[in-house]
Image 1 (tube, rainbow, N blue to C red):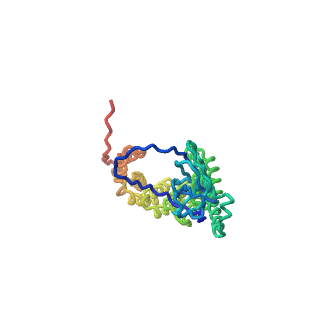
Image 2 (tube, rainbow, N blue to C red; image 1 turned 90 degrees about the horizontal axis):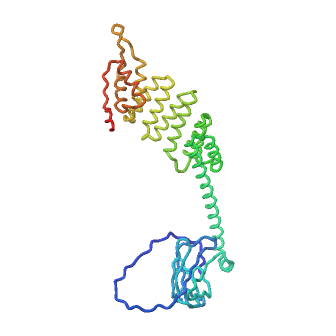
Image 3 (cartoon, one colour; image 1 turned 180 degrees about the vertical axis):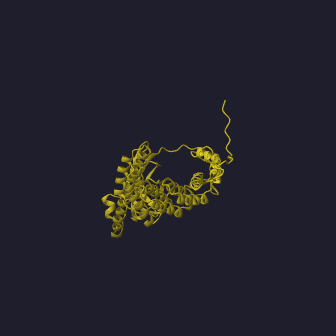
Length: 374
């Protein structure tokens, strides 16, 4: 008997053959009984695929050459079912064309449903296994156990991660921190979990803790087998925001935004825009102007960098002593005009309009008010 019970295979699609239509004569079919069951290997795992066959040859001496009257396919869950003529059979489970297990004296009765399970964990089957098969069985059990434990761990982490995200959406950052602290204790090598923990801490304005954990998230992901550039870029961006929120050193925040832009150039416009806003909010007009120019170069469709550019330049405006007219630096009015073009009803539209009016500029905006609904 072939006892290679531990082999598995992917479920294959069922081929359907269409036979030509023929004229047939109806015959009365003899009453049959039904049979069903489950097939599991020596590790108590369902066998996928194969066939359960029935033969009236009642001795298992030559299973390969026996004539099998009935054949029932085994599905991917290890189950089979079908109908057979009444009688006593030898039931054999075949896998990949080879006999794996058999059961004697299977009785099928008219009008009854016979349950026959192939349980290869039974002592009778295990005793027939070769030393090599028994060794393979132990290795298989260890692998299954390890996989099961890892799957349970991942399931627990996913639950905690979802709880944390739901809590953050609800503004309950304490609960989010608690959930993510549990998650990182289960899988401390996962950068994403430290990123989520840092986000929750930033929500509580615990910026120093958030900074530490954003850096840890970046470090772990960079060292992983499959680094995620989008995760690293997001961590650098949020690190920049956390650094800016401490009010200690805006150059550290700028460095984080710069790193985000290098890792994910597709989003560089957003990262440079955040850098420009950070400098501007801390009254550093020169660095704000430089960052705004980089943001515009990376993505000329974002309106905020144009407003920051205009605001940075207007601080260098002079007043003509004779006329008293405000003289803005080159490019200042154009920056405000561009902001109004891109965001005619944006949060800085009024400020931009006021500055342009004070400069005596004609406002060029493509915005048109919609018709009032009746």
